[in-house]
Amino acid sequence: MKFLKLACLSGLLWLTGCASTGITSLSNPDAIHGPSTATSGNQATGAYGSLIPSGELQPITAAQAASRAVTELAAPADIWERIRRGYGMPNLESDLVVDREQWYTTRPDYILRMAERSNKYLFHIVEELERRNMPSELALLPFVESAFNPQAVSTAKAAGMWQFMPATGKSFDLKQNAFRDDRRDVLASTRAALDYLQKLHDMFGDWDLALAAYNWGEGSVGRAIAKNKRAGLGLSYTDLSMPAETRLYVPKLQAIKNIVANPMAFNTRLPLIGNHPYFQTVDIKHDIDVALVAKLAEVTVEDFKALNPSGGSRPVILAAGTPQILLPWDNAIIFQSNLEAFGGGRLASWTVWRAPSTMKPAEAAKRVGMTETELRSVNKIPPRVAIKAGSSLLVPRPTQLVADVAEHVADNGQLSFAPDAILTRTVLKAGKKDSVASLARRYRVSPASVAEWNKVSASATFKAGQRVVMFLPMRAKTLAQSKAHGRTQSSSKQARSKVSKPTRLAKQP
Image 1 (tube, rainbow, N blue to C red):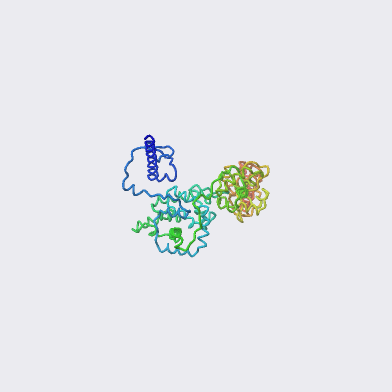
Image 2 (tube, rainbow, N blue to C red):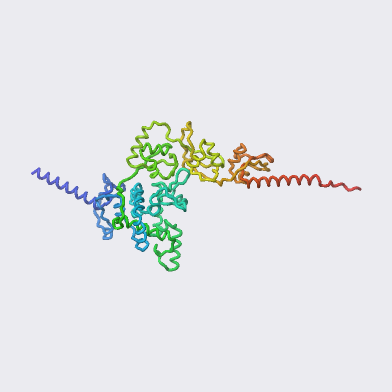
């Protein structure tokens, strides 16, 4: 009898546990994804965080019941299936959508190349969209924007996978300096793009209008809506008057969405992309050459640059400005292991040199021990320009230099150019109260240049008549000489006037 009682009691406890587990899983879909960190006063917080309510059960309304989605227990087989499950935008049906479907399906190689290129980035983008509770078809937007090429640059100077204009990028904290362009950075640009899309959706309350604003500008869409409102016309995406590019923008996304939803119906093949992370972040503590990172990670330089495109073709990663890099998941561990065992000397063979004055690339190259061709190639210097004073350039790192590039340089360094005018040596005579600063302003050169040419400090003043060396374009030289000639003539006239002026004689009595 004791044994029977014990067995009954054990069975009752087991059923109670099953019931509790079942209620938790069904009443809280988050249980599938792991424990929540949020807690409240009326919930138990043990190993399962806030999943198990400790108070009395409360009835829910019909509306609340209807809003509860059923979570599928089986994980999506691949990233395409995961995207399909998260579609959340209303479908657009129009002749333009059909037209774009036909355009894409007649170019199966183009679709395949785009899709294969997206392999490195899609999982991260989908993860970010789900975290923000945004429609998953937005993960397909880079197909429209850049064909998933993070190095893409438009004729209007929009750059990266999400095609940010320079000013828009800056407004969303995407740094653009001499050593990196975050508009190309996979993590930073995705964060900024989703921030911007959320902002636009909050502004217009409609995903089609938000997408139109992403392409055309929020001000342009706002003005088009106001115009239709004044005319008593419709205010939806299809009602607005807009440029042809924006008119096709949402139909392009809808066409790609339809193809991904049912590739077979469009005679299209999508490459298998696993529903798992492709890369992980790795901390960088010291400046290191790109070629060395690729070698230690056992990846090609091309594959490394595909995950870390913000540096463009720069040969070095400056740790103070880029403290993290991305590597394929397994190669990140290989890199850390090989870096710890590395005994090949210094990690970086490049550093930063700041131009002390405005100069031609040939002169700068001579000063830092490079050929002009190499200096131009490493720093992307276009033809027919001079390098402005204060510009930051990548140059070979001296053997004796141990310190890495300083944070304020790595994070803010700029490379600026001036038209490559022919500069000629000009000797002027300083006027009264002339200084390094005043001459620099007058002839539109940097104070540092004037100071260097005359071997004085940038705060120095000149004595009247003192000889001052300037390197000026021919036009400025002619102007300076004519001014000096004018001053000389004026002085001569005054002198002659004093000599020839008759002496007034006293009246004779």
